[in-house]
Image (cartoon, rainbow, N blue to C red):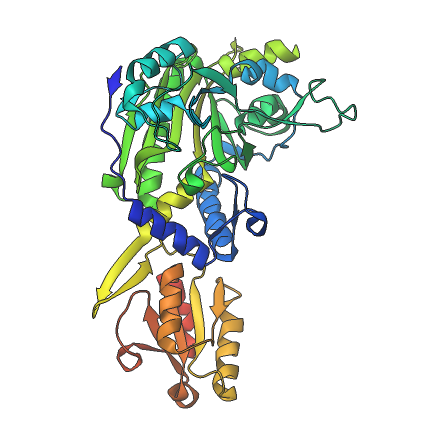
Length: 470
């Protein structure tokens, strides 16, 4: 039994982030007008831009800047034999317990973690049950406060569908929404190898939706039932698996530093209980408002995945080295991260409050490349047609290069505050001097100076100005 330090929770910050996401159109509860659906969320106008920028940054780092990684977009539905061969039908489960008093269900490993005991997901049912029964008097039901729970049961997380099943009986030939995206990579490994110029070692990356019937989804977009994964599976010679693994670990750590996360908010967590086929497994954890939790998994998986699919499909998935003619089943190292978890980490890192004359001002200090809006263009007054026309001309020119927003609603101070809250790096204002001098004021995010103190830039030099900044 490994003792851990219980997470340091900042509920107020988490509540503020959730409120900001709703107020400024980052994240909404799914089908909210009907009461919502637990642990399912919609990305709003600014949220979808931020999420797309996160995905673009990941894709550029993992695929476009590497010569040894190619992309894939596998279908969500696959032949159910894929999930049988991979072990998901029989073994893709979480430890479930139920409060005997109010029948609320919760994950036993999460309940143990909250009292400082790490119950690794790789532990078998009996081990987790023993840990839980030994410590359940310290655990209280979050619904009613009782400490009387059932024994642990394994609850399968795969979400079933009736795709192509017209019998009305879902127990016959069940089809599943994919529980993870990597299986689509494994079953397409041979297709990619045969149809492209890749050679071992090489990687296949993809971004896509996955679905899990979570027992207790929690912490906003951190753990949801429908989510998007960014995964890369790297195929290598058995003798080079751990060499490539350490390279991948270093690259993924540096990626988050380059993305703007502070190093003190990141740490490695080593898995103590490895599955039988794994060589090594580490998580990169981020210090969320609810404490350090998994952001990304980096794992060395051996040749298990290709081996089980070779056996299940009857296809030869071995690789023949074109130079040595050596034949082997490639070993796989992977990195896997959720878009939602990165999204929440970025928001947590960027969320900044400033006290100004007794008033709290929020500034979302997003990295420029991730900001949903790069430049906001304002006419000083909306009822002055010449100002509006000039501002519209500038907006129409800049939007060809950057995601811009035209805003003429409210006074300038309120517009600045609104853009600060969504993380816009620069605001540009067309005033009466602009009509005479062909220049505009430029206000950087969080700048508290008034309009007369802000720098001015010639309209003809705006493109160069923003090219230098971005």
